[in-house]
Image 1 (cartoon, rainbow, N blue to C red):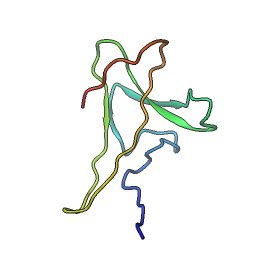
Image 2 (cartoon, one colour):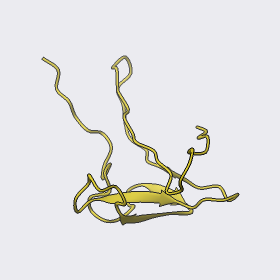
Image 3 (cartoon, helix red, strand yellow):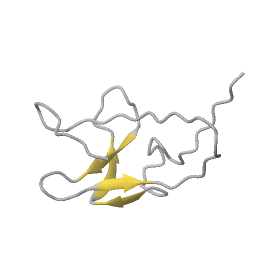
Image 4 (cartoon, rainbow, N blue to C red):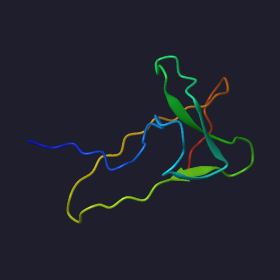
Length: 84
């Protein structure tokens, strides 16, 4: 049996704040997604400015991990490309 443990703190921004994420040109806003009631989202500044969020966490060598995330644009049309 596999035990699922979330290594990301405040991964859904439910606390209404960015911390412990570290961000540049980012803020936490009430979620614009109608399926998330009383939720929050991280909003990264658009345009030509760089924006990012990250969080450090510890892993164990040799273990397997899965990272799941959702990205969206607040504009109509196609989302811009994302780089890592």
